[in-house]
Length: 270
Length: 312
Image 1: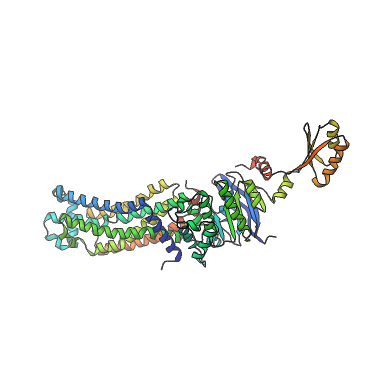
Image 2: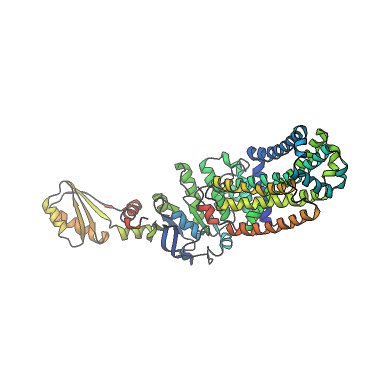
């Protein structure tokens, strides 16, 4: 399925990454920090702020959306309803992992090639722009997705340790599987492609990284939609979101190839 | 001696906003030729190579390399050219072998393992093949980068400052490798500001400073831009000796010192015996007669200093 050149890029990227302690730490520590932060916040809310949260209109609205989707939640005590509500937000929050890893590896892989001078040598081979970008995107996206899955398991393990294990079956709905198996890879690929676009258009590495980090905001937008009760992502909206993301990915790959001006990355970057 | 034209540029120009890096370059390089591209820093050497190698596009003019337009079909062009970039651009955390395997993997119909072995051995890096490129000396990195540019056996090789920053021994090694390549019938386009290097490696030399200032063989450049000088050392230069020399119609210029006359002649071989006879007849007691040929450095400095209007 993958052509020889894309495979070549993929293997080289992983080989270089394995020899780079900084990038290894980045891709392993960052997801763990995201998980640790979420677990800590959920625990703190449950310990100190359940009552005040229950009193909020938007939470009540979101809870009724949740109960509509998973009727069994309605039978639980109020505190556990809040616990299920909080755990459900992790469905999108976990998308920060592939997004952040892919953004970081996108800028890193293009920036380092440019700064070391290897990009010009690479551009003097018969490699097509789409092969270069797709190879690099896959090299960043595949580990990002695998780490997302591993972190999901770690998250549920932490949930069990917190004593909320009985609620997991109510949280992991079909929409969760769609998110983890479809949205996470699509988000990783999209983040990487947008990272590549930003890197190839920016005048230097710093401005590339600054502009690309904005990519995480749509993820927060999805969480906000659920938390405020505006929309609860059941199977159909999640699939629709997946289809939309697939389309955006195709557009991003096309744009990345168009916008990746070989000469601007060779000439303009300092 | 050389084949058909394989690199042709016509009016090749590259502007970056209001700055003109290269203007109206017309150049033809024949198959098997080694062309030296000389110019000071910022003269447009790298920009020209990048345009010819399909890395950047010209803003005006066209180029044709191996029958391919570099700006229209860069990927097809890259199958038949090799480029040694100004910076080695190696993957420092990968071994020498892996660096070459990676680049060889982008070409069709080559035996990657055999080519990698061939070039690591040719460049004297076989024993260090599994060492990280980051641990190599500058000379070794340059040889590895040269191997990378040649791994697919390109018929045209662009070398951008191949010995820049190398110590004399490493530079000598790289020059020897380039000489070896030129005997294999490859067309080599080499940019440098090392004049002896250009003279020793190149059949023709182009001098550039945004515009092309001259393009010819080193000998023809000497003839075009300098007349050889005849230096006659004698016990004492008298007025009579000077007058006798000045009276000769083929003497273009004359410089008198206490014990030497330096003369520029129209034709050294034909005119020098007549000059010697004239000054001896005028009473000169000659100690020695020598011919001084200008170096490439003289020509180069004459060209780049005398054309301030070309400086952008």
